[in-house]
Length: 183
Image (cartoon, rainbow, N blue to C red):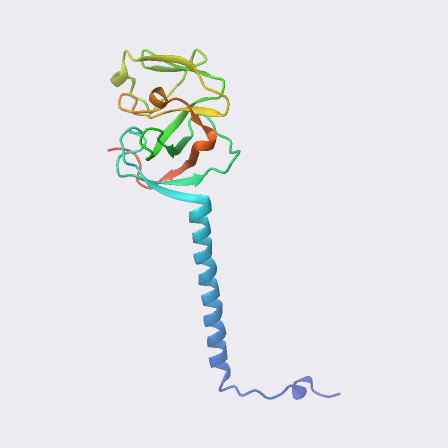
């Protein structure tokens, strides 16, 4: 029986390390390209960053906070208390607010207390002492829309001013706040 190793061609081991280094560089370059492509796809299709420019969402989000958003594809489920972004109908600037009412619900504020279909809503992020005596509505949220409000109710320009916002006009949903909470 013959030795299988004897049938293999001899290699010049002096040149082997250079070839290995080139292959390693190619693999590294390919890995880097895949990572860059992944970041670009994620940034343009899946996530977005926004710097908060008003205090209408304080104390949850403050001026200067950076937030990470997931982009909202068509048909996304929107729920109460989601914090979403959209183009302000008045200014055209990107705005961020909380979803307080869904299609078909009657939204009102009675002596600073948000009510949905006549039921008071617990909102620990809202300082009711600063908006005592405020009344609004009731208004019924139209089909395919949401009612949005800022957490800092006394200064927020929101759906009480510009009306309900079509779900298709929402751009993103808050994933996390990089620097959050006013202090």
